[in-house]
Length: 465
Image (cartoon, rainbow, N blue to C red; front, side, top):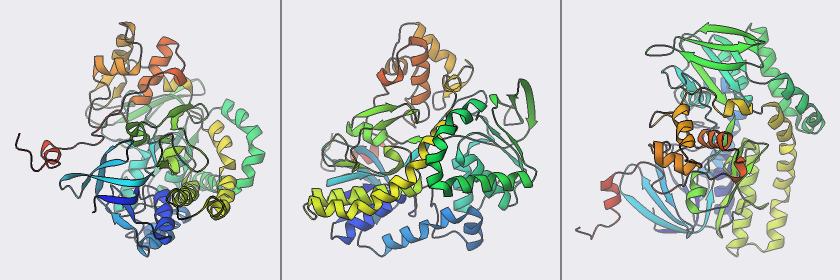
């Protein structure tokens, strides 16, 4: 790894892979950094190593990643797996640890953040019990190692991934006991006006209907409009309970996969000082970007779900569009050439995004659930801070997220607030009546990932004190 590159791309998912291939193809010296041991990101995880049988069970969208990864391997881009990015400044200085070795700083003329999305954390009583797992983590185990639940599974929450994972598990021989979705009748009514436009991206709807039909034919229980989800058990998950159509139900299970959609992973863009805003339809904060993916800081661009949720295909197009802008910034393409090069991807991305307004209405999480109504629900897993403790801090006069953080240590653990920042913000907004778009987010400072004192000290090898 060198100390300086023309372009550093953070994240080897669809956006990062596409951008690296385009930029390297125009002679740019590219460094592609990624935490994982192999390229593909979450959506195409382990695509090079997955046996053909497993890849077939995961579906055609998973196999699309083969082409992107092959193009990267055939390019001149410098790919660095097992690389943690623990710092990013507005001056495009990047703190990295490669393969658990010494910490170091590198710089870039241009930086592209393509680190994707996080599953939206929605705390509820019992969600920290062993046996309760994010659906994305379940997919990681399946894609990377072929590991699936051995004694059946319940899936609960909201979002297309619930149906996809249930369909994948069914094909892998897993007993899917139930799929419990928070989608209400109101959501269907509000989403209906968006359906005509969504039908222009009909392949997404066709897939969802196919997953649903396969599950029904297999006898899987599918329930919409569930509320008050809770997990129960002494040392680990033993059962779950929920309300459906006015009645309380319970179900014995030792495995629960939860998912409430995804939100942009904005830790790096926050650390760099990029401007962000509250996106009401996607119920999350997003970085302020222009049509090329340029952020409010010169030389820092963002592509893929880290800049706004659009899915894998949209991320791929966004990565290429950002790469053409970077080529213009570096003086390799003029403005007219970059526009012409990006035109086809813009067209495809526009078509692919037609379904988003429909999905955002259909899978919208109830505001009451995001406010974490149960005081005994743990909000900060790292520091074990409950919703009740956060409300007590607010009642004591701590009126924004950072004050709550200082008072309770919520957000000070290893995840640095990734799993609790949004939940805290919703509780603060609810108790103070300050709109989310006006509320203060957790401040993000380096190190963004755990770094040892020895690794930090390695930055200054000549220092003795």
